[in-house]
Image (cartoon, rainbow, N blue to C red; front, side):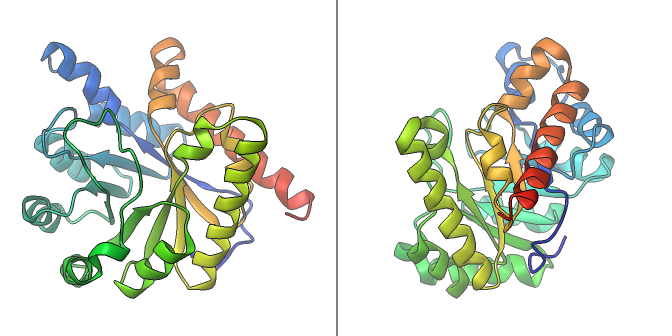
Length: 256
């Protein structure tokens, strides 16, 4: 889907299968299988599969990345820290996209966006290597215009706007965070960047984000895996896609 076209009646869903692997690693078994989950997501209408290969390998393992890339007919978005080890793996796997994220060993989940401003030189070189291999590079950033502008300068093709603060907020604070994301999406789109979003999105809070016309893709994992534990993975993915597309249509009807 072209980032320059904001008049789509659908919005893409990238399903993150990390927490399928979390369940597996909790008991050190061979199940549940992230590869199988990724293929069920494909059957249920997902547009891509996201995996975060963490440095400590707490959930997704190297073989998961290689198998999903080889066996699942969906574009892969490989989330990773900006290390030489991850660069080597990415250049071997050749996913459609690499999303560069900050990473701390002690965190439960990614706590904030990548500070592009503080490492422009290093990121420029790192992104150039990935781009030369034909990989689209995305930067997971807070919805701040200065970080978006820096993302363009370092050569990113995509920004993924961090929706975590929106997801944790309520009432007027949530409305203010939503407005911040809407403005950021407009800024990024105006600079020619594809706009994705994700983090903390679930079935009750996803609709307003899905209505933002500049947003091309939402990457969602934990909420889908949690629902899947009760209802099954196919239904969980299918239900999320229905909410997102319904929201997009409603937004267009309102002249969003």
